[in-house]
Length: 145
Length: 145
Length: 145
Length: 145
Image (cartoon, rainbow over all chains, first blue to last red):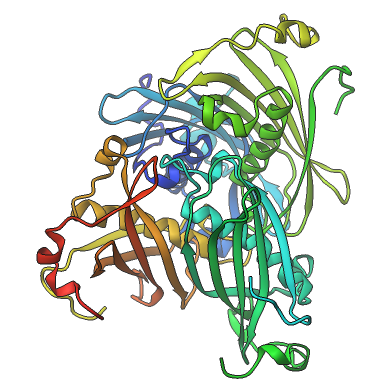
């Protein structure tokens, strides 16, 4: 992962590959990584001020509006995986998070993923603007890219 | 499956085993069958008068309170599976459904499963008695067993 | 969906939204669509000559190497969804499939998705070139795009 | 949980309820608990000498042959859950594990579960007797119950 600006929110989570993560090809199923990334993303969102425990009350949810994921190398049963995530870009109504999944044993890069999220007020499903202080807190992540 | 009383509600669904159903042991993962059984159970519940499309409005849900499942023989990628389900027993506040999963190609019995369900009014989570006419409609399924 | 060349392989599958597809935001969870798309993709691959029932023997698998998915509108419990897929582009060592998910009731476009796949010989994990006749069979889908 | 014999293998794992664990009823979906229990069971099996990392080589797998699960109280988004598991009973060709899921915040018992497992040699699918030393190591868990 390239060096990040010191004000960039980051997260690191770990997962051990279980049977339910694999398929009969002998490797981790492509969909299983997205569950692992959701766990990392949820903890990253908590660092951004969006705690899971408050969402049930406020019903203001960060909703995935786009996922891009590249499968570079396969993981296998019992592999320990390290998921690194960081806030990548802040727009007016959505923000991007970037993730890497590496195998702990050899640090090989297995997966890269970017996700765009919008804040949505449920149950109406109405998009909400990002908190105004984000443009100053994460000034280095705004602007055209 | 033993012969059922003609008034017993029954259901039949089919599934083709996909990669996401399997694990690296080369066979269908034990949890995947419960997803297939949920699809059968949902269609059986619709026959009992509990349509999925109404639940979103009424928020009256049939909730699984107990599952018993026996894994007898494994299924593999590309197997076509037939799920048979029927209403097995009606109690005051809950009802039991029974399921069998067989491989279409050889009719081998792979899975047997029983599930007890209760009617629950969300979001309070309050249990609700079964519709009073069930005791007459399914009289042959009530009483001590 | 734009009009497709008549020689383009296509697929249509249908899914009814079950409880296991949804989350507590009240809508279909973002990962659930990828399971639906896998079912459509598997049936599309069968049309391309890659039958699921043969993969267990040959261990030659079409493996997802990239997914791009856009979440445009949410689906809800009991919605009937129609998934349209087609072969979009053929390269030397990988091919792209494109998918749309629409709600049957109002034809609203909910999801668009593109996936790149490579043929991989397991258990070695060795990439294999696409069948040579694809460049003629799908000549209209090759070349720079 | 009743007091266990000091030689009984036990495990404790923790999970935070994520969106992918919940459904539109607003609570954790019944199938999601089985994934959490699989993680606990896998770590318990490692304590019994069945390490996940060796299974890929030996292809000797502990396979679930029966699950009984009771859903007592619902969990919600952001709940921290504690899963306790222990070896419950040892038979000639299979062993039983028992699990409890509690909410960390109030210690309420949400789920009880028992699973019977057999050792199976893949890819033949041949059942294998349990290691002979289990009858002495876990003497207090054998015999009629």
